[in-house]
Each structure stands twice: as C-alpha cells, then as structure tokens.
Amino acid sequence: MAGTTPTSAPRSTQGRRRLPPWLVVFIAFDVLLVAGAAWLLLGGGSGGDGEDVAQSPSPSTSAPATTEPSDDADDPEPSPTLEIDPAEATVVASPTGNITCAIVPGGVRCEIASLAEEPAVVEGCEGTVGHVVELTSAGVSTPCVPTDETPAPAGPDVAVLAYGETSEVNNFVCESTETGMRCTDSTTGDGFVLARAGVTTV
Image 1: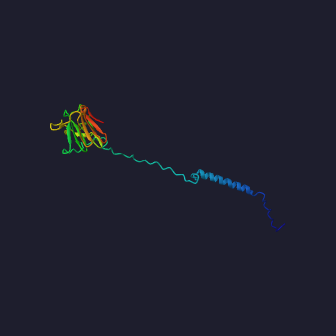
Image 2: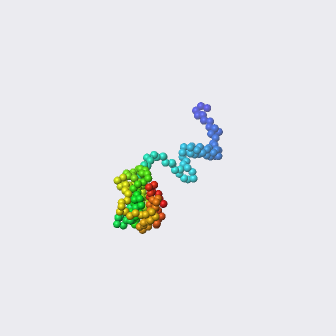
Image 3: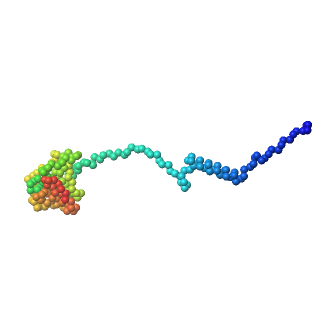
C-alpha cells in the first residue's frame, strides 16, 4: 500500500538459546582448576602443612683457619730447674765417682760424667739430654744440659755412698747399687736408675 512503512519481521530468539545453569557452573569449575594448576606450576605453592619451606643458604667459601705452629711442641725440657741449696743438700757419689747426686727436701738431681754411648741429639737442645736426671713430686725429668755444663766426675770432697747404702732427705731416697744409682720418691713411687747405660724410670 502506498504511504505505508513496512514493518520489520520479528527476530527469531531460537538462535540465542541460554546455557543451562549446571553447565555454567561446570565450565566455571574447570576454569578454576586450570588456573589453580597453572599457579602451582609457576611456583605459587611453597611447602605444605602451613609451614614455609626454608631456602637452603648458598654455600659460602671461607679461608681455612690456620694454626700457628707451637714452638713448645718439640722443645726439650729446659735446663735443670730443681733448686739445689748447698746448705741443705746432701751430696753423695757412687764408688766410681762417675755419678753424683744432690738430695734436697724438694727432690733429687743426679749427674753422670761418662755414658757408655753419648745421647742422641735432641732437636732444640744446644747440648745433651741424658747426663742429668731429676726427680720431684711432679715425676722424673731429663733436662737439656748445655755443652759447657756437662757434668764432671765427683771431686774428692764428695761423700762416697758405698754399694748397698742409702741416703735420704724427706721422702727422697737414693741407693747406690752395682748397676747404678737408684733414686725414688717414697710418697709417689716414682723414681729412676742412672747408670752408664743411661736413664731408666722405675
């Protein structure tokens, strides 16, 4: 008809059907699962049970500690330390005069002039070890004796201790035997025998 505007045909709504609610929920759940898996793979999760995973400290390098060598480790014992007061010392010699012993309240020191064999050289000792032996409450010691202090045979003024005889001061006792001079501490039981063969402890 002339002068009349044609009306548009109504749009069909059949091509825009809405998804059912259960399908929307299912799709949303799948999206959440995928997102969660991606988050875990990218390092989002750090340890379980609610505890943080402690990161291992990176290894550090440090210079090894150095220990200064001790000068005392291989040093021989010092020169005779037993104080010998002539006023209170009892000095005796073996019948041969090769061994001389001085006994005081604090200990005994014996010296031998001649050994069957010269003592071996001891590192750090500018002299010899073996010509002098001391006995105190601390035990037996063989100090380093400087070369210019090597003992000499007993002089004629030194009392001779015959074989089988003893001399004692306090708890220190020396006995003259044919195998050497034997000195002991009756309190501790420590002692030594000094002879041409060397020093042996008892």
